[in-house]
Image 1 (cartoon, helix red, strand yellow):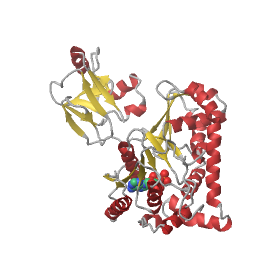
Image 2 (image 1 turned 45 degrees about the horizontal axis):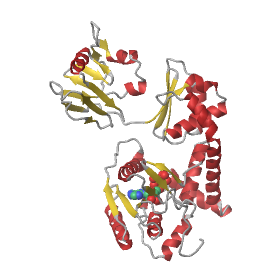
Image 3 (image 1 turned 120 degrees about the vertical axis):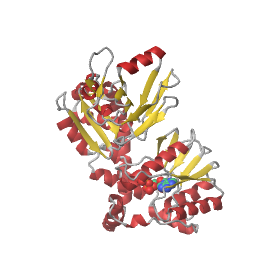
Image 4 (image 1 turned 180 degrees about the horizontal axis):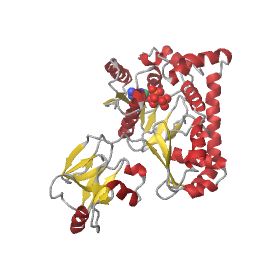
Length: 426
Ligand SMILES: Nc1ncnc2c1ncn2[C@@H]1O[C@H](COP(=O)(O)OP(=O)(O)OP(=O)(O)O)[C@@H](O)[C@H]1O
């Protein structure tokens, strides 16, 4: 450590008098970060997300209250419900919930400071390398990047875990040990508890070396970014999807970089090596009418017609979901979809919103007979990733709408009133 009492900080991305919010878990790293920042940052506050998952969760929150009171730093404790059925695993769901809170709590221009350090960086680098990531993934975590309407800053990213611990002891700080860190079931804990100690026996600087490689990958990525971005611009359609024919014309190396940058722009996790292989061997050569996809870490790329589409996986609307709606106020569904009626006060009578069950029929405008909804959606060129998750607007057994597709009755009703029905999918 450079001095016994001070830890060097990576400079903040914005002016030193910017408002900073420390993400405070109550563990060693963020307790040290809070202590280290409190004298330096005149506008500092802390945010603790109470996940309510652990029997000791209240103790962690109380510890954060006490640490902040001691330093006279304002603290907000935000409680969240973690979605156990999200398919992300409990850790992943808690992380998602935490970031949702960070984003909603952050005010314009505020900087969120997280206590990731050099050993975290080394672990992230190794985890990405084990998924055969390219430079985007190997860049691991950035010391700062734009985040929500402000910034995310990792001031301790160049600092080792040992130095953080030494600082805490030196200043008599108290923190809470997370008991789940001791179990090596999780990949990251396995690296931390079993692999890294072994590597350090032979290469004492192993963590620093991996973190340095991450930084070199980030620099390579940044240098090449301009050329890749120009190629990406040529391949990207107005709706954000990639045009397969244009993409195919690029040399394979550049194509891989373009797809990785496109994925990064969509704020999805870095594409593993197997993603590029699947792209080359399955998605690009797929028949135009086939529907091929590649999934990784709660994200997917779908090939449909001449397009590649990338998105985070959305929890599907429950098959039993059912809501009554009079159209007066916007309706938010549990999967994040939002429905809004514009230009009319409300429907003549309450309608229902539910998931598709299959086998439904719809009577379209200017047609004599009803049609299978499945075929009607295909005919309307609605992409499969939307088709899968469009909820239905029903009047009893009659389908009034499936997303942008309207029945003759709803169509006439909206025209009469110069009204409009909007669906926003999350
Ligand atoms: N419950 C919490 N409330 C507020 N901030 C938290 C909380 N948990 C973690 N943080 C902040 O996030 C940082 C990273 O924590 P942790 O490594 O557990 O999270 P993560 O988001 O899963 O990280 P990773 O990106 O390494 O997977 C902590 O150092 C702390 O600053």
